Amino acid sequence: MKRTLRFKRVAAKPKKLIPIPAADEIPSSERLEAEAFSELSVDKIPILPFSFFQIDALDLAPGLLGKFLKREDVVLQITEVEAYRPNDSACHGRFGITARTAPVFGAGGHAYVYLCYGLHSMLNVVADKEGVGAAVLIRSCAPITGMEIIQQRRGQKTDKPVLLSGPGKVGQALGLTTEWSNHPLFIAGGLEILDGPEPEKILVGPRVGIDYALPEHVNALWRFAIAGTPWISAPKSTLKPP
Image (cartoon, rainbow, N blue to C red):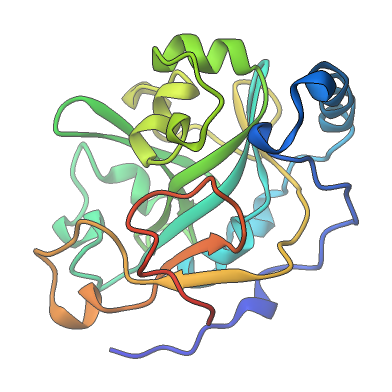
């Protein structure tokens, strides 16, 4: 199953925003000043509208790179994602509408949070129109604000990429549970997605941990990451320029 990627059709080009450096790229002497600047900047960034999410998951996924996830004082920048589509043998939607998967079939722009191995809360952004059954998994992020809260929730006193390099870590850093499923991400309050700078370059590769799926879906290049950032999950070697 082969599909041409359509990166330019995601949405109107976002307003020019000043990229906020990742925590490990900021010298310790400048960390406090940078954090103060980032908090001021984030307050001025608009929430992405409902219409932004009403597109194919394969278009929405790269479009989410660089955008910001915000829950109260914690702000993360999305650095890595995976697309899951209708008729995709790796998508939870393949089971049809159940108590667990019902949010996947809702309108794009809502959260779908599920438990992996009964432990890790995995955040997905529902894509496309109501009834389609598609979503984008948030695999990794970079911390922007709320580092102390993130570290406390993660139980790790570090500012290295290991803090947020994986979908379970992202969910934990945001303090999410399955109760957040079906939450609208385009409305202020709670959990929301803000506009952000478009990456200059991206990487693509096969999705992770879906060996149970059909070969054409296992090999599909539906994993996307910002090129040059250390804030991405393993395996990194399978990510290449498109």
